[in-house]
Image (cartoon, rainbow, N blue to C red; front, side, top):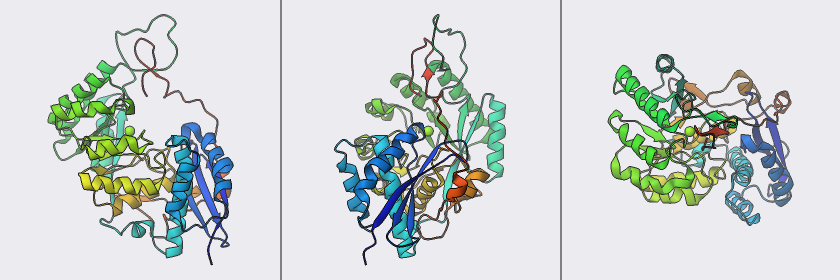
Amino acid sequence: MKITIRDVRVILTAPAGINLVVVKVETSEPGLYGLGCATFTQRWTAVAAAVTEHLRPLLVGREIDRVEELWQLMYQHSYWRNGPVLNNAIAGVDIALWDLKGKRAGMPLYDLLGGKVREGAAVYRHADATEIKAVEERIHGFLAEGVRHVRVQIGGYGGKSYENAPPPEGALAGSYFHPRQYLRATVAALEKVRGTFGPGLELIHDVHERLTPALAVELAKEVEPLHLYFLEDLLPPEHLAWFANVRQVCTTPLGMGELFSSPQEWVPLVSGRLIDFMRMHITAMGGLTPARKAAILGEWHGVRTAWHGPGDVSPVGHAVNVHLDVASANFGVQEWSGFNEALENVFPGCPQLRQGYAYVSERPGHGVDVDEALAGKFPCQAVTETWTQSRLPDGSLGRP
Ligand code: MG
């Protein structure tokens, strides 16, 4: 008998103070359901409405086994496509359908993807502080935990402090940064860390699109002698053509893509071999269905994966990242933000970190469940983000 979709529901919860969106696909088979991540934390209610108002009526009654067909249907049905709100909504359903397929097959997701090529996924952790001494203390802490890849930041993304650059009278409030001063402080911090920890530590730095294209090329060239594992999100999606300039002047490895939502963004960079690591937020690109295709595209072009893994990915999304990691020949490293106790309780089956490697649950599907009653005790809050209101020294908005 064919199993069909009986209902599509949204679960909103914030166990770590970050609004998360999870989709539950219930089926005609009693007790059989799948869970997907649809978290776009800055626009969470828009995603929830896209799922319940638009995808649910489209999907109820359809067969759960036809994952590819349903992905294509959700993608083209809105006519306009490739935006992060709709893609996250699609991802919530898509991942839930893959979860269901794994549960029906009695296999963990990594087995559906071809099986493991490694036992665990190496992670990188985030070492950020306003003073270099505190950054190095954090790195010592990570090394003691077995982590071998560390992202080094000084004073937050773009650096929070700047000197001798007062804004004009009446400048608006915001998160101010100074591109040139940030560049100088970053090079100095990376040099110091490399000197302290030697060549064995894998170093990453996230530019978070804070530089003009010309300064971005300059930074990539300046850090070349420090042999980074990769330089993250060096340019904003609006200036991808500048990656060709970076390639011409240095060998610094480049990781790019957490803001991507369209294949028109990642396909040319991968096929043109203009980056070394793709690191999309897999729900913003539309879920596991497009992510596994992108991973395979990368394998053919010598581009590795380093999927986006911040706190605004639900444990379901993190689990999918790690399933892909252990099943992809061209996996590089996994960004890891970790789970607090509340997240572990709301989402039983969270992937686990041990000695620098992330491991998934061996249960069928992605292995993560949700305690809905407990999730309800951590309601999402309406917030107006301030960190994305970043500003340049003259008070004008700069990319966050
Ligand atoms: Mg980043």
